[in-house]
Amino acid sequence: MSDPVIAWAEKVCGVVEQGGKSLSQIPAIDPNDPAKTKQAMLEYLGAISDELGKLGEGISAAGDPPVDDGAAAVDAALKRIETLRGSLAKAEEKLSAAPVTDPAAFQAALAQIGPDLEGLNTTEGPTAELKANPELKDAFNTAPACRRVEGV
Image 1 (cartoon, rainbow, N blue to C red):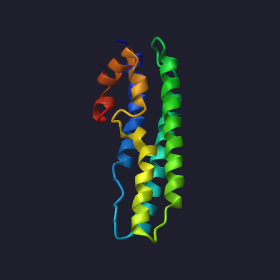
Image 2 (cartoon, helix red, strand yellow):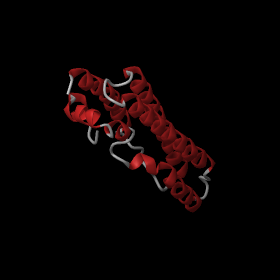
Image 3 (tube, helix red, strand yellow):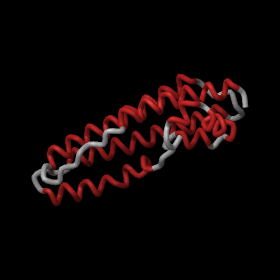
């Protein structure tokens, strides 16, 4: 494996690493205060969307990786990011409309956004499309920033 491929993976994982730090604080859920929970969840969903946007920008800024089919891997990862951001927007819309005056109705609304968030439940996230390329997978396994990022 060439050093430019590892350097490319290092750039991408550096962006992932920064995003992970900012998202590591999951909002507190208080079943006795739906309004507070709703606000915290909306802020967190917005933060996830922002970090995915930054990841997309970071992948784009890194350029196409110097491997066979590198551009296709980048395109697939960027499409995945946009799909995830679309799902987050749907979840935010549903959550915004959720009533906070009725705790049972609020809990039901929270359950309804679950399917919109399923794409976020993978540990690899958008890097899975990049690691589908064997050369990039090796680079992700070698680059120091990638090894620091759990699940990448």
